Length: 119
Length: 110
Image (cartoon, rainbow over all chains, first blue to last red; front, top):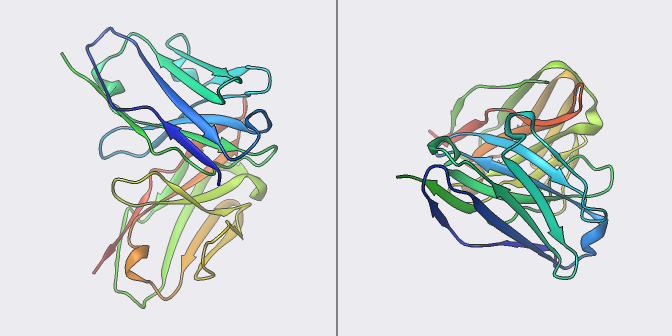
């Protein structure tokens, strides 16, 4: 079945970087887009950006431009997000999610990765 | 950026009752680009409705979506205990096109 399995929890200090993975299985990786969405504690969902695994092109939320990089490795069917210059406000659960061609919706989602930024 | 405003913030109902959740957009949204998700504590969101009114795979017909333009509604009939969760609407659009979520409606047991 279609699955997105993400890497484990992270604890980082302010100013550091974090890189999270999202391994896809059960479908052709390059046919579907991968989104990244985060959720701060007790808060709603924030869209961070999207990557096309077929050609590696990515588009980021304006708020995060300059700090976020999305990449992929087609040999392992894995997408990555790296967030730099971490601050306490980046403490959140980070999800990856799949979007089909011209579907404009997220299905399914990865299990989420808690990232804590604390000194 | 298109802002989605969900109401009410919290809805308290009993099992067996029906729930009506609202999602209002700051600009017109194509129905094609409007989706609803359910999120339970400690879990990732799950797609319920896409294209404003189409149920995702495996979603019971107690869940229904409707609306157009700037006003969309998620209706849940005959509430089951497992339906009590947080619900989010999501859209794609605006200029430049962005994906945005509403702030969520918490459906709690009365």
